[in-house]
Image (tube, rainbow, N blue to C red; front, top):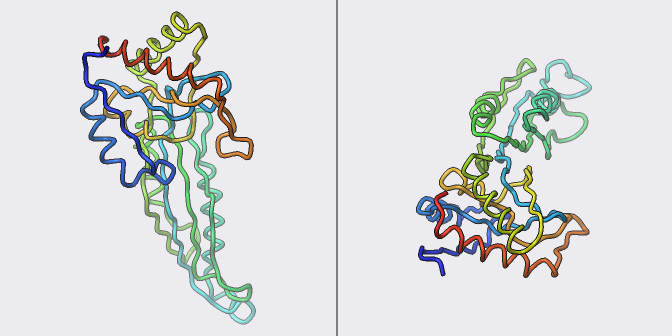
Length: 251
């Protein structure tokens, strides 16, 4: 039996950003030697998550100058046109080589077709692999400048989840899990990175975190989303072995 205290923390608001559970998650992580996250693997090969992208959520609001589209078109300044320019620029910031993506996923603007749009708005999603990239991208997004004369651009928001980085200590945790899976249960345990966030993003800056130890399945958020019942006892055994092993390991 482990000779260290083991804390099980169950939360119910992860899918909406963990607004109430985050302080408790971070408090417990700050007191912990390491963190095991039972987020589903959602990978048929049983892979653990040793890297998760950080998630930023931003709102961009644009103000233009309304005018009659037929009588005084030249006197207006279209917020919708400015929004289009901003979207093109924002999407150009995506860099697959370093794992950074910027996505404008929701837009609205204007009133009716014969009025030059006075207002427009967009929701922006940012995904980054490292804290260094967070520090680079935040000033860019929060200080966007107007690209059309007479319009005003304002961006609010920030990082909803920091990155879970594949550090040396995370790799050591994974190595322990991989060896236990092979020697005690008899299967190979790969590791993977993902762009999706979990509560493991909150614990990662505070304690070495190994994620994706939950149900094995496939199709996250898709119509065919499912888990494999036959894998549940295997996963449970792996978690139990990890707890027992880590109680006597220096991570």
